[in-house]
Length: 307
Length: 304
Image: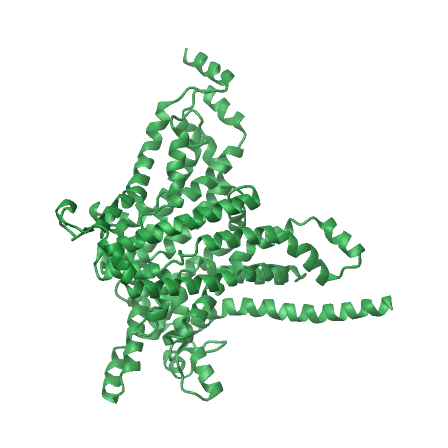
């Protein structure tokens, strides 16, 4: 009887619903609900003056007070400015991995290319804590490079890690150091996918290596570049906090504190949960809108979604 | 005319090649050198290295840094916690994600589309750090080992990768097993898992690296709890202390304060040695990883 039903179902191509599957999936759905959706209900804390340990309904109702407070908070403005600066720099640097891929592809000696690719990709897998430790060894006041630089210029050693002015370019440099090789992989794959006949045709027309690169390789990668560029803009507010939190110290605090880090400071250091949640709600809504918009545009360009 | 042109291009080509090799090797050098520096530092003799840091080769040779680390309170325990969370977390997450990835290919699942959207939405929407913290706290997970495992258990992105792979497998294998009376679980363990090895290896590598590198969850969910301190967080604590002391030294002008601080400074060697040991597992699995991650990033970029 069951066997019969099974064959019938196969023949119909419209299999009968199987509720046993539902029971297998539900425990996992519960975990997703508990860790990804319940926190969204936690947004309710933003309209109460939440005190840990007190039931939410017994807390004072604040209405939109925390959201209004944000508009007057100079720190919000400052961290928004820092976030924007980091984001603009990183967007301005998006062509780097593409050019790195083009240049790397011009290295015709296999082992050298493999060597360069291997070691430039490695930092992507290293945690920010370790990167901070490396940077500390090289750039702190008694660090190797700080002292070498001081001896070279005959000045007193001054650490780039405790310089308010150098934060933007130095943190962006570290970000590139970590991600350059990794981000170039997708472009290297795009180069590998270029039809060799295009190069041959260009050569017949008298193009040298340089013109091949400009007229064949570069256009072939533009689509990938544009899509990644748009997604980058979508992630404008999502700078993350790990890197900035590690490199933050008494001196760099005013220029390194990005929005995510400010939320952390308000919520988990000052224990002002409600205000922290309020800021992160606004941030979430704006950034979701940006990401969705960016995805729609990218989809239009590419014909399918990327994320 | 033509010949001259050709000679010119090949000359400029040569200049370019030399420049390009130097540039590429230079970038690679910048990526490797920081690691090399801390490695040679940890093998140097402390009294020599403190005065004159090594540049390309260790100053003297000594294993005392490593001896110190192995005697350091809490080192082995945090190593154990790091290894444990990486092994348990990777195993649980990869198994859950691949099982879900398989189940979501089943059209006979009721409300499949709805649940799949419920999953995908988690890639875009999140409650944020503070709300998540309050919720995790209310589950009683603070200072609990499972706080490292459960929030990272399900990853929508990894499930999409696995589901895409499973969909490409020939359906006939599964159908014939079904006719032989095999249930979903049997089909999953006996057919799907072995056939999906390439994608599962890719996902496992990423999940494992993620677990090994995590420190922020340790920082907010199990701060100051020595029995749950991971290796990354142990390093974080040492660095924090070093940075605080550096700040203090900067602000201290009188010599008395200076000497008082310098005696309490945590030794540089300890910090660097933990850094070497915490990066070691990544160095060791990296050659195996390389094979998989290029595939992973491509699948992820194309499908979704």
